Image (cartoon, rainbow, N blue to C red; front, side, top):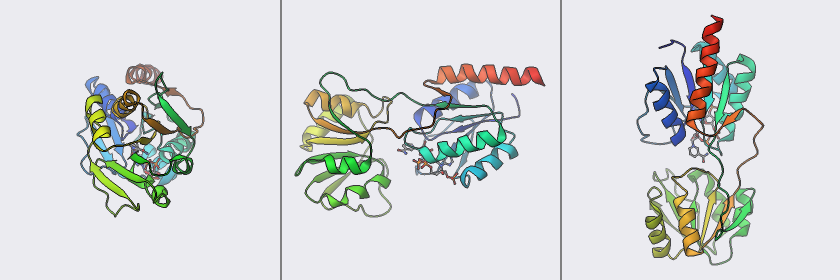
Length: 252
Ligand code: NAP
């Protein structure tokens, strides 16, 4: 095993699977988590938790730990850490790749309204709708001005501060299988889903359930990102790691 670690900026299911794969290949891996989830699933390899202190902090960490390769496997909507990663890469010249799951695309039967921002999503909700708000807690406050709408807010961990919504109920659970999602949407008499185009399979089940039930979805598009070297699956990243670390070894 090389002493120089691979640093994975994580917090996603793909980042966790990638850490497992690289560790199984005998590589030294440090996964970095922001520390937002109270009880994160166990990760293979080393783990560090908490912000780095901006791009400068991340740059310093990469230099101090003698990181051989940086992998940004953060969530498609986590743009600040990804911007910081690009700044750190530019100043340290550490080899870099982004792992990003592809976005969802509408299929026949889907009734999506695509919007570019939370604000557009707030404005697009019809009066008296019953809405599944499938968003992180930091995005809920934008919907507080819609007192004419009933929200069902689904979260994994309970919010630390009361939710700033007029008419809502809180559901503490993870997305389930398609049949569970169908039953949930029906039981709560939901008429609309508001969510972000996260991609991946875990949270796609509600989209499939909405299609089956003919429910509309307000889909918040992914934020624009600067062009970077991006791969869409862990196998391609593993191959890239082989090539880069192979060429680094050949140079030493
Ligand atoms: P963000 O807005 O891009 O980042 C805000 C700050 O949090 C960063 O500047 C950084 O602090 C710290 N940070 C973020 N990711 C980090 C990581 N992997 N390791 C260490 N520090 C990190 O990110 P966010 O949207 O709050 O998301 C936080 C984390 O949750 C991400 O790792 C992401 O992969 C995961 N996640 C996000 C979402 C989402 O919807 N945004 C969904 C699922 C999972 P410093 O500047 O101090 O370094």
